[in-house]
Length: 113
Length: 113
Image (cartoon, rainbow over all chains, first blue to last red; front, side, top):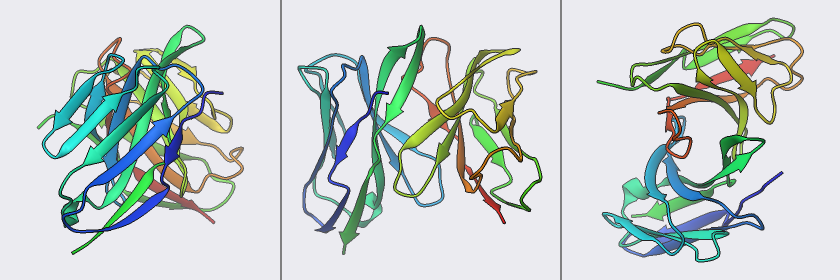
């Protein structure tokens, strides 16, 4: 099946640093999404991208939908302790006549105060 | 407040027992989904339902069953046939035709011993 390769797997940074993570695939996706999951909680949608080349911001977060439709990145600027969590990318695609989301394995972010 | 509730937060069962996980939403969403999450893994789709009284298998449906008798409710039964049932289970919902914007509940952690 379709897979998303998310990297890095984990990151350890100092408060105030910028962060970048990305997702790549051999398949084309119609929509890219980025979620954040706090420990023991459900993922929360951060940013949704609908068009190839689209660049969207949400506060200190910026994400882009790759031109080839096979990749996306998420940047976090000036990280703060509450940015800690696992960030998942997800791509929306059509399979067997139904739309479905495919998820990456996540990037675990640790921010040291 | 609109949202998705899953109960209970933690569930413990003996091997060989069936167990049902609850998912309720008051977002008036037509579509609902069940995912399984294992440590270090992305979310994997178990079942989904786009309308009342209809549901489809996801990527890992074996050993699970669902029902969709009401728009607001989409319970998941983990049967004794599921070989590795211990996991974090997440329910999500979306408006019809908008699979790409799913909203998640807080999850249920099931432990089977």
